[in-house]
Image (cartoon, rainbow, N blue to C red):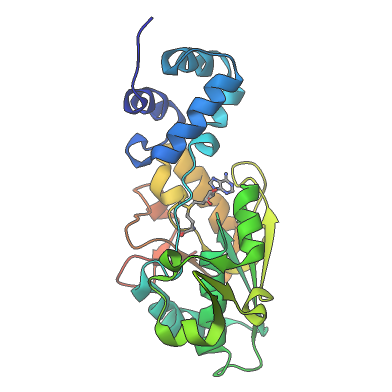
Length: 265
Ligand SMILES: C[S@@+](CC[C@H](N)C(=O)[O-])C[C@H]1O[C@@H](n2cnc3c(N)ncnc32)[C@H](O)[C@@H]1O
């Protein structure tokens, strides 16, 4: 029997599933080992064979490997651009006053709550007649539970300004509790983004450090098409600063910012 290391396992298993093997981390390794044990297999090589003969299991690989790292206002400059240029531009092009936004892979709520904070701080005072409905979609029940609790450790708030912290969080020893008025702006739903369709007619879709980091080739193209379909005519896609649409998905969207974070459908 050959003994494989986790990296070697990823190098062999990921390309077949259009996944970028270099992006996965230790937490993914733990989940794979748990799965191997649950199936009664003896190691990575065994599991590779199992994946070959069980297409449904192979289709679940991206979810098994998923990474759950996040924080408030990740890529801070992009949030400023969203507040100053992108959201006002979306509102100017709309005929109704209610906007819909999705956060795909909303994890513990840090990303959709960042959007709710941007809205409360910068947009609501300027556009009091408008409102924004935000939905966080996430498959992981632990992430959803953290999001609904909305109590955070300081590390995840390291890009949050002192003013916003003081205004919208209450401190209790080593944790920060998000204000109820911000919590109420976001609803969360359990959804497997690989399987379930996205809700339609969205003005803004945040898809950051998920599809455009981990997916490649046809898997990425398929996911990008689903995002495009869910955006309305004036809708905008926001991706991470360290991400790239990739050559195929680039044909589906038009850039609307120089930093490569915002795209129109
Ligand atoms: C790396 S985190 C990124 C979180 C956030 N978007 C950000 O940029 O900070 C990816 C999140 O997507 C979730 N996720 C991965 N695959 C998913 C799927 N198929 N359906 C729903 N959520 C998924 C993970 O559980 C995790 O919470």
